[in-house]
Length: 175
Image (cartoon, rainbow, N blue to C red; front, side):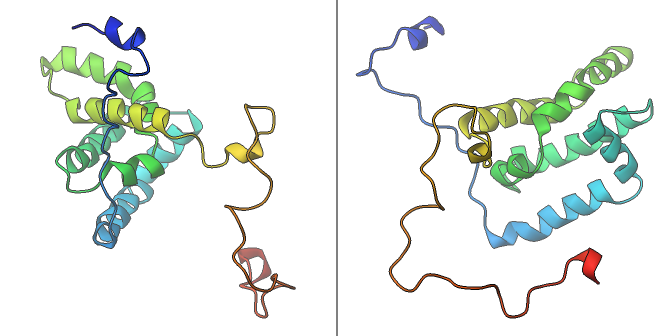
């Protein structure tokens, strides 16, 4: 059965189950923090910063692709939930920036497996992104139907909050 059946399905046809991107638990925090340390520490941090700004240098491509390959292995083997990674990082967009260089290296080294986990994780990340609208969609008034005004729902009973916190946390600029 090809993809055409999906385009022509009726409302009574069964739906495919939603993709499972894993459940996030407190036990995943340490692994996640270590991933952030790798991305924001030496020697990766400068290259990762350039990736985010789309100003990559020649040496950045292989370094970043290999780091994302290693992180992807953790996710694809369910050692860290994909939901945690895909909520924090844009693997699909990172792949889009790095895929041409990965393809060249695959060809040059005759290693079709180079960064295959990163490529698979990027496909999964694209599914994750398509399944979840941006959390800040309420800020963009010009796109689609607007959410109801207010917070996250009906306010629980009780007095309305008043004033500001007694001891607000100072910002970096106030220290």
